[in-house]
Length: 544
Image: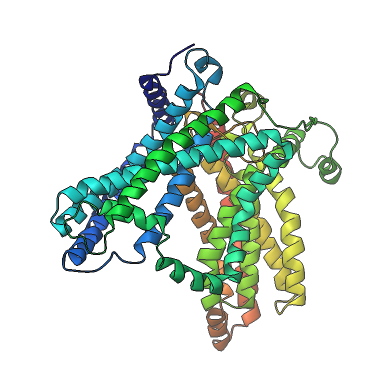
């Protein structure tokens, strides 16, 4: 039997760190930005820790009551982050090869060390700032060591909890096939349930949280006592509780590491490799309802690309899940502005704009990632115009009915009127086509080497996507560009604008209708320009 060696686990962790770093190659700017932000956070936390240390040194009886909340939030974030890292790396471990050379305990220990190293890399600068600031404030060099020990202990416990929890959820998902679907469903939409619960019980929470804050049963407070146990100013610091927290960590981490090994061995040795259900396959060239509707007005390759995109989205709704960012953008950025300066017309226009933007983003974003596996065959068999038009057609097929069904009844029964309601539907359709074309044009500028296989919701098969901040920044740029195209419609439907025009003798209805027509023209023009760019990039695309 192969004997367990810690240096073998360290080699597994080092290998996974190297693979993870290679997946992030080419993003040097983003890494430097993150390093700069972490340095700024470290300086700010150091200043706060210095002030806290000075307060304790001058006789404050205890650390601030809200500090334990920050420590609890940090622990929850570390558990979540370690769980995500475990989910990503566990799927890519070559277990068949590793288990022939080392025992399962070595592999899982390497996985734990990998997660610990990644979190420590993120927390190093902030922790150093806190340690130095607290030591200077208390004028006690020893407290810097206890702060580092507290952070290291809390990180180790969080990694052990997150890794064991993720493997337990994975094992249960393998045991109960349908549970994987419901787990992903809760992960995607469960935040809405938590938000509703918080809104309903916020008065109760406002009563319970202060009661917890003054109690002695706060594990986070024990960690704070551990961090401050190196100071000579013992007022408000319970060294005994700090040492108890360290003892709990020293006992819990090996136990959770053993649980992680047991779970991983059950997954590798006793359970099937996949819980995916067979969904069957469908031909992309058979007759379709879209063929009967469009006839020969749209070429067969365009209809085939559109049908394939819709079919892929039905199986793995990665584009539909991306529309969550549209919801965040519309609710947190646009809605407050419209609520302050707009009226009923502007609010309905916001609904039409958001639905159109969601349809375009759902089916136009990330064209390379969606077609990653068949990209060589795609580039040699489908023309650029057919590919781009097919994705825009897929967005319109899904977006036009949604925009029409939602916006038109609201406009007819509301104070907007039939004519303006119809124009707002046209605005939503134009925004849908525009956003889809812009998404394809931007997505075709991403090199194929930027994509890596990652686990995804509602499927056991990894999907290809970018990692890092680059895709989010591009998506934000797309939102801004499409918003600029719709800006004339929003401005023309603001009461001060058409009210001021009415005072000058221009009918308010004419201002609103004219601004909506201008928005449609601008969106269509931008869609045409983006389509040309997307077609050119498709034709010039090279696989390296």
